[in-house]
Image (cartoon, helix red, strand yellow):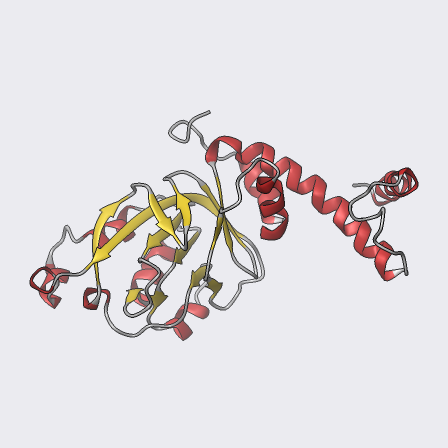
Length: 243
């Protein structure tokens, strides 16, 4: 299944809402995908629930002074503004800011507009200005650190919804973005359904393991589950839990 034809199922979204980025990273690692976590980004005021949605991208390049005066924001075709106004509802805007937080990728007004248009979240490997205000918005947001200078200082928004690198992770439009209280991961669209299913199964077993460890069990043969006695105990536990 290609990323161009994939449409995320609501059941897949719901499954991904209940699993951790760490679990997803392990599931992707099993498939040889080892660099899907967006490095160096953190939630701004974690909202208590995962961020999940297809990627809609914006790419920045190094700014050149003659092209990046404040007057550029008067241009109705400015890519940063157009991206905010065209990101589909339910999608996560992912910004390639060259891993630089010297200047802001956006501020609270643009992120508020993205929220009002139904955006599922926003990620930059740079920084946001007005971060304290963004922390109080009802939209998940992830960045490297607060940054006050306007993006024109260092970056030029140059391309909407093309392939990008964000925090050293490859992101293609339509890939599924998941963020939790720790960080953000990119799931290739074509395997999102199976990764979601596997992550749910892994999470159920991990919940069992945590309970066993809290009850005094050792981890050898339990995590991972290599002893039949532990697998049998897990089967009984799962039946009792209705999971």
